[in-house]
Image (tube, rainbow, N blue to C red):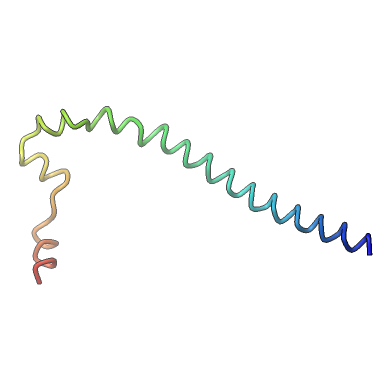
Length: 74
């Protein structure tokens, strides 16, 4: 009985560490993406920068295409 309990405990521990390792790897990837790609965006596209843009430039960056607007209206 003790051998079965220790084998079951080992299986549970291995399953936990398998999930924990995947989560750790995912968290490292997210941290790298946020620090290298997302954080610099606030410097490049601040509210002041957007406010100083022409309406045409804002539309070019964030506007919808005519095709998409026609699909929404249909």
